[in-house]
Image (cartoon, rainbow, N blue to C red; front, side, top):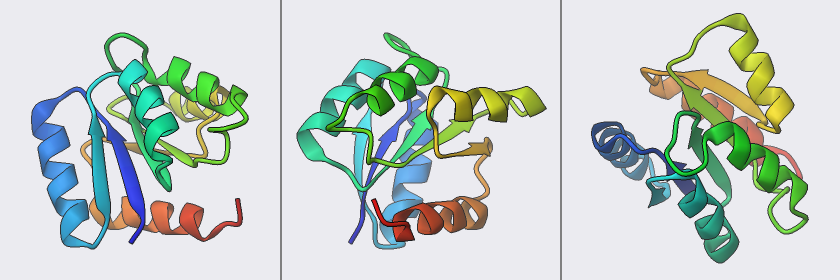
Length: 123
């Protein structure tokens, strides 16, 4: 069962998405700010990271850059989750080091498809 680290500061979003993922067989770990997301990634080595980009302490852009610069964390695929749906937001997320990008509100089948594609790639 793949382990997902969901880094999301909004309690309602965190609860809804984590429950939906758990029902589909994922083990879900939760972090509420960017620094906690980095710390938990080091400690727990999740299979994939779902990263809100508007976070307290360290925003998602900074988290992605730091994780991809760290040899021990760079293999973890990151999907940026954001309510920002402008064309340059996707590019900005990819430039920060995210492996994919999805918009909120989350379309679960679309997100699962992106997660499955990244989890299937050799690390």
